[in-house]
Amino acid sequence: MTNIDYLYPDVLGAITGGERVGMTALQFAVGAAPELTYLGQPLEIVILLQNMVDQPLEVRISLGLPTRTPDGKPINLSTPRKLIALMMQPGEVGVARLPVVPLLPTPQPIENVPIRVAVRQRVKDAYRFVRAPLGGAPPSELAVTPFQLQALRDVPYISHPWDQSPENIVVPIGVAEGTVPGRSQALTAKPRYTALWTSAQMDAEHDRASAQVNEARFIAADLMQDVDAIYPALLRGVETVYPGRGVPLKPGEGKAITKILAYALRDHSATDRSYRLEDLRWFQTLCQVMAFDETAARRPSQELVMRYLFDAALYDAVLFAYSAMRPRLRIDLGNSTMRTARANAILTWQAGHIEPDPVFIYMPLALGGLSIHLDSLLPGEDAWGMVDELREAYRQRVRLDDPAFEPILDVLDRLLTQIETELRENNVKPG
Image (cartoon, rainbow, N blue to C red; front, top):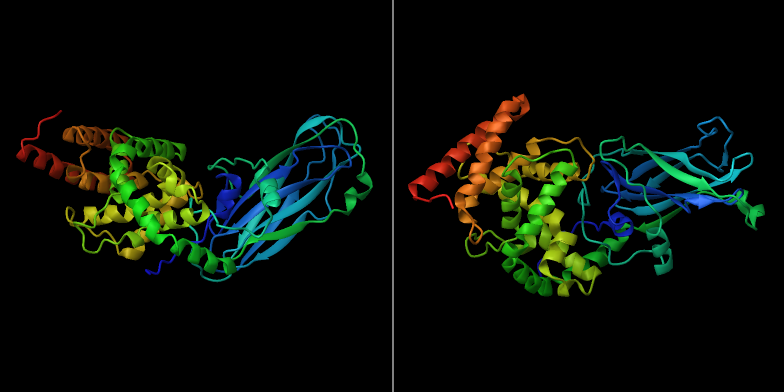
């Protein structure tokens, strides 16, 4: 059986449903459980922590507790420790729980009391990522009971804006009017940390995923035949992700990106001798998803792609884009290490962990989509449509006069001219 080097599962996303804050080697999510409590009744600040790398990770968490309401009334929030330090093992995922107890003279009822959670990370040695920056397959098992897992999923995790610092998260809590019994033990609560998943479980994850390879080939075959039908959903996904992360798209740009994304999901075994399905991240993720979810094989192709495989396919699309550009452009496109780094950078940006960069539109995705456009026309597609839109996008971006964009625009102009010439030489008329 083919040996596949699977990425570690996205435990954090499987619990939060997607909410996450990223700090290179660390991803985390923060919430309060419960959000509303009573005087003398403790609540917990819950911090899910996911080590993204193959090295130990030092994590420090501190709580900033308010002492006054906006109108000056005193607030008394007690916690046994405002600062905790953890050493997470390579690839470990865990949950820290820090108790907080409202006491008199805190007014009641009161809402939106802001607790500030500061998270810091430190890695001593050089590292490599063992998880995808965005997305990834769920874990097939966790070191908690189903009841404990559901309790973690029920926590309302904070949706932190991607353009704000990841080091300080505000968690609002409330104090209801009235009292509850059992307060005598409230001040004895201590901070806790529980490991949910460790790298020791990866061998079992690997075996479960590998056991799915043969069946996954059949699912992949159906999926690859459905790409034209999936294309509209892929386009909606692209046109949502880019503006949502601070990079608005011009005409045709989303279509060009989607072209190469769809291309990554097509079967190239008949035309490319080096093509191996097992090398594709989206297929590897499919195997892991099937190990996690026995019903995955019965899901429609579009649901499978948009729910689990979109980000993995985007990673593959970056690498396909470079290969598609190479025959058409006599420029240095970098080695395999640089190309992989660009794929990771694009996903890291889409996860909201680095600053947006409009260059991510074109280099290499939209340029790759334009490169394969004539060989990847959709049924009934006007071959000139996307080309004309990209020519208009080129004009609009030239007028913006962005120096960082100039090299990309030169390449875009050359590539557009090539495609336009080929269309005219083949007497292709606008639809």
